[in-house]
Image 1 (cartoon, one colour):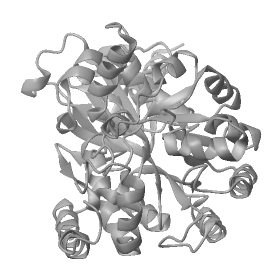
Image 2 (cartoon, helix red, strand yellow):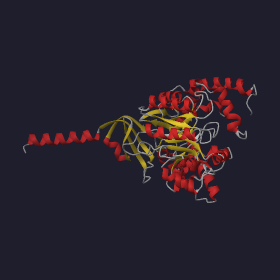
Image 3 (spheres, helix red, strand yellow):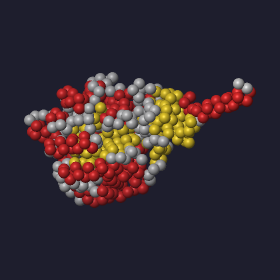
Image 4 (cartoon, helix red, strand yellow):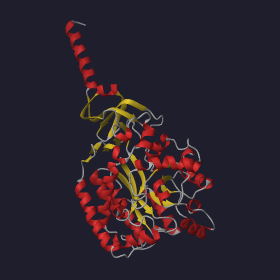
Length: 466
C-alpha cells in the first residue's frame, strides 16, 4: 500500500469511527441514577438513556453518551430516572366530584350513582379528564387504564396531552348518561373500538361495571366480543360484600371469580380491579386465566372494604399492578402516592416488617402494571426497543435527601410533587414541572367553573345524600 492509499484508508476509518460516535438521535438523558426495572433490576448510577423517535435506543453508563449526538440532551444531575408509572385502574373524569361525601356508607349506591345520573355529560367527562390527565402527568403517570362513560371524550383529551391509555367504555344494566341499557352500552363500546383501534397511544376497551351490575348474558357477550376484537375488558371484581352476596345468589354460592370462570368470562383480556375478596382457589383461577389485576390500596382501605391479598398474588406470578381507583375513591390519581400505603399496610396485615419490600412496590407500579395490562413488551421498563415512557424524580428536594437506597426513597419518602420531568412516546410533555402540551391554568379554571354547577345541583340543593 502506497502513502496515498494509506492516508485514504486512515481517513475512511476515521470517518467511520466519527460516524459511529456521532450517531444522531432525538433525545439523550445523562447523569442519571437509572432504575431500569428490567428482569435483572439493573441500576446505572451514572447512567445514560438514548431515545430516537418514540423508542429507547440504548441504556447504559456514562460512556454510552459518547456514541450519540442528540438534538436535545437532558442532564438530570444525578436524579432518579425510571419507567413512567402505569395506573391500572381509575375513573379519571370524576376529578370534578372529588371530596364530595367522602365518608358516606354504601357511597356508590347512595351517593355516586345518583350524582352521576344528574351530572354526567360529554362536557363533564372532558373537563374532568383534562384535569385528571394533568394531575397524572405531574405525578409521573404516563399510562392509565380508565373506566367511565363517553370514553371517546376521554380519548380526545389523552390524544391532546400526549399520554398513553387503555380506555374502557362502561357497560351496565341500568340507564346511564350515554346508554339506556347494557346492549346500548355495548354498541357504544363497539363504535369506540372501531374509531380508536389503530391509535398508537390509545387502546379502546370494554368496561362492564361489575358482575352483579350486569347479567350473565351481557358478561358472556362482552367476553366473546373482546376476543373477536382483541381488546381488553376492565371490570370491578371481588370488591364488595354486596357483590359477593348477589353473585352467590345467582350462582349457587360461587365467589365472583369462580362465577366469572364458570361463565367463560375469565380470560387473558380481563383486568379485574380491586380483587379484595379472593381466596386461594380464586387466585389459582386468576393465574390460570392469565388475566390482570389492579391493586388499589388507598381506595380499598378508605372504603373499609379490606386489603387485597396482592402480595400473595404477586409472589405467585399473577399479573398485578398498582392503581388508584377514581378521584372520589382514593382521591389522588398518581400511583406514586400509593407506594407508601402499599408497603406499610401489607406489612401490617401480614404482621411482617419484611413483607412487601420497596423493590416489589416499584415493580408493581412499572413492569407489574404493564403485565396486568398485557403491555409488558412495550412499556414498564427502560430497555432498548421499548417505547420511551420515562420519568425523572428530583433527588434534591428536602424530603428526598439523602438517597442511600433509591427504591426505599421512592416508596417511603417521595410524593408526586417530586416528579421533575415526564416523557411519553419519546416526547417531553412536562419539563421542570411545567406542562408543555396543554394549558394547565385554563384546564384548572374550566374545572373550577364546573364545580359551581356541582354546588348548585347537589350541594346547595341538598338533593343527594352527603
